[in-house]
Length: 597
Image 1 (cartoon, helix red, strand yellow):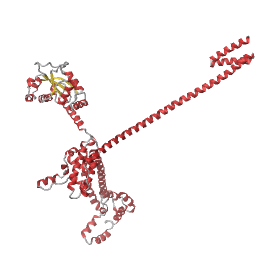
Image 2 (tube, one colour):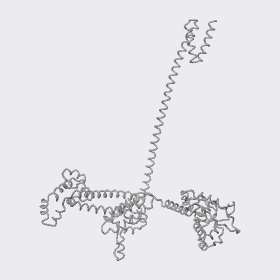
Image 3 (cartoon, helix red, strand yellow):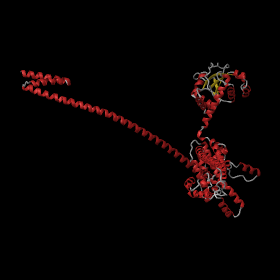
Image 4 (cartoon, one colour):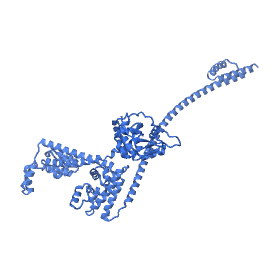
């Protein structure tokens, strides 16, 4: 639907009426295909740019001056994207060349063309002229005509609907911009912005919920607040202990596993035994002696250590479980943020950390916006209120914004905090630009920039001269090149090892097949040798009686037994070897003739 079927091409227009006047053709590249128009009635429009602008909106007047000479649609969305990329780079494709040669008047060899082609892109026109010799031009007059063609394109092509043209333009625009920007799903900074916002809100929620758990469970076990300071551990213990009166020395190993400290586990058990609510008389005595008659303090702790009903303890336990789940989710979200920051901005992460880098990206709006910010803007990013207040009251402007949360600013002395913030903002600006505009994702530059910041701190404290920025960048580039070469070598080695393994497997399989094939001929050879041995034995048996017969015939002995043997031997010789049998007959005949003589 986006790319309609090719329209029937209209015949070539007749040559220009006036002698010596060159005909004007307009090449228009639309989202659906290439279109060629013949501007045969220029006199009706006018020869000036202002005249064309005044007649652009009038379709009847414009259609009399311009008519369609040919149209060829793109085959698919991929073909449209390839043609659009070629046009934007000033290259004439084979499809465009064939289209022009087919629809433009033919030029005889050795003669100049009596027409010219108007194009929107001058680079495309120069390439067409160099490749085919067709004269092209691109000026304000031609561009105004092509704008008018773009406005009324659906009226010139019958099979092209306005909705189809809009769909083709939308699809081609998205694919072209995506290819130019080189969109990468793994480098979407919007996920980092959402993650850091959610992390900040989770920190506030977990803190408020943890304080609510402490206050709620503190009515039952007030001593636990002083023993355990961590909110997550307190929620764990509130869920595990539930009722403090049930704690005993048997629970010390389990408490030690939860807390990681056996002394604290014993302290919790002892506090549960001596806690208020278990022994009111003992508590009265201890409170009056320790608080030195402070009646308000005594009454507060007396009523704060009250027992809770089972239903209340169940609600406290469920709420503590919710707080634990939120804390665990917060840890998982932080790990996700670390991985995303290493993928999106590895240099900025290695320089200033994941949290501060993510806050800078979220405050700027995106990594590209952060890369466009100068170092002076990045330095006070997050302190806009203080900046405008200082400008309004003509006071001192702030020295740092979100960068203040970096460890480098905290390590610097009071008088050097402003210098350190300015230097760190400079390095953060460099790191963000490298992360935004470089195709290779590595943290080498960030590590080198971090080393520079460390050297600057030493310079402020001890006076050690730091290295120059040019030397550091050269070292980073060399390390990056060596790392890429080593990675390529590793890939080649892995490929070679896999190839060797596959070759070994093939050789093993071939060897096994050869061994199987060799076993078969060996068996057959052994069988053949056995048959040959048997034949040889038979031959020897046959030859021995024949020799005996020859000797008997020569000596003139004529017995009955040799005759029987002769018959048997003849039968055996005829069945095994006919040649030996014939030779034996000849010899017998000779012996008989000799005996008769």
